[in-house]
Image (cartoon, rainbow, N blue to C red; front, side, top):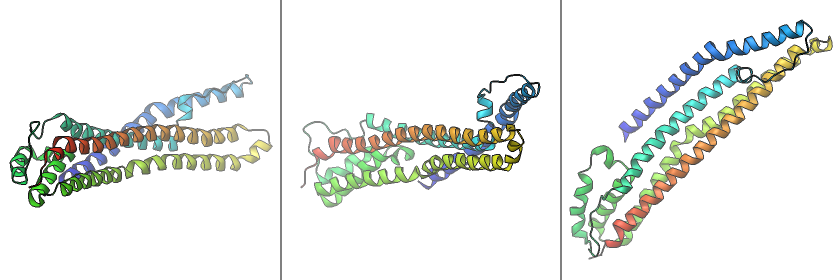
Length: 265
């Protein structure tokens, strides 16, 4: 388990670094030059006295530093959720395997529990750490020591509840990112409004270009941040739904494939 946490931390760290490098490279090489060219073209047309219809270029909308930070956090959160989803798919694959080969009509006594435990203990070490094998092995060990079916049922339920709490706690970083992205958007809004107020004297003199550009920064940052937070929350909801189903299906598997065969001595 400690090795799993260490590898997951390293994965998250490298995912963040890669997100920073890739997004910043796109902004420096493509997005900001495109936004600058678009704004310069509109400024030149206005200076020439032409009637200019302002268009919402994608590069202009996402071209500020707040939006860049939001995209970095978005990719990082998606990478974390992708890692969790891949682990969940591996654990779900255990539900399709016959970890306990107990024929119909067979009764399992406490002294038989050790024999059925061997099949689970023979699994690779990584697979033994999955929820279903851990739950089945704990249930068999509890049955062997107590001979109580109620104790086995409580063990299965307790293991699944602990796993559910663990999965929920491990999503805290993603929930923090989902909160941080709108906050960064609001920071951009405050910065844009502050810049607009700082150029109010130009607007009084008749030049409103600086004010409108600053207000554009304010509204664009909020718009982008809210859209990205919606995407993250949707993906987070789907992942948590998958994890909850995994826990419930594992508990149902243990009840169907083990608990109903147990007979107290």
